[in-house]
Image 1 (cartoon, rainbow, N blue to C red):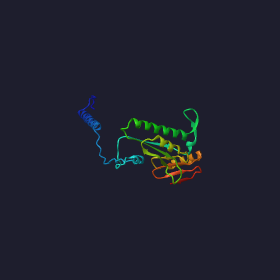
Image 2 (cartoon, helix red, strand yellow):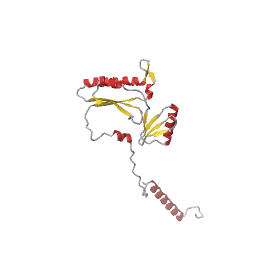
Image 3 (tube, rainbow, N blue to C red):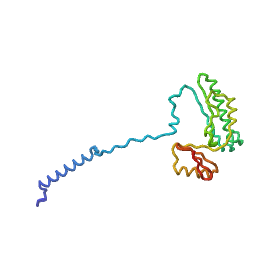
Image 4 (cartoon, rainbow, N blue to C red):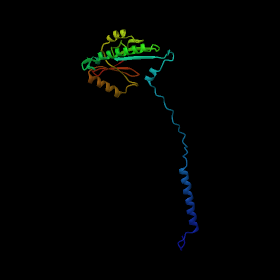
Length: 211
């Protein structure tokens, strides 16, 4: 700066150059970002769903239009417990379940008679743990056209006994196993839990049996 207080030409030139640099830098910052990284995001790993695989239709099966109903009834020991029925009286849960299953068969039979052009089949199955040599799920009436008379006889043969099997979709972690071990001790009965790797029986005494 000279003695009169005015800027010299050199200072003005420096200021102009400084402004040009600042404007240029601002445009570069606001422009689209360009990545120089060579990192590639890994492809997602497909998750295996054992339940979905079990329910996947068999390509070799023969398909036809109609209705196929499967009625599944819990016949474990807890079904002996009595609860209040719709009429207010106390009855074992297994008796209420049997009556409901028979009512369903009768409704399917009535529908099938009114829609003779359709294929209607009904099956009844029970589930509970009855020991090593007995399947957890058992067929009571195979899939067939509804027949209330034969269904009533078969349904009345069902009895409440054994433990309740529980299924989970992935292998149980140690925390889950500790939970079921504690629940078996608290309830005083065996809990049967199946995962994709094994079937475990959690006993009230704290022991665990694997099948």
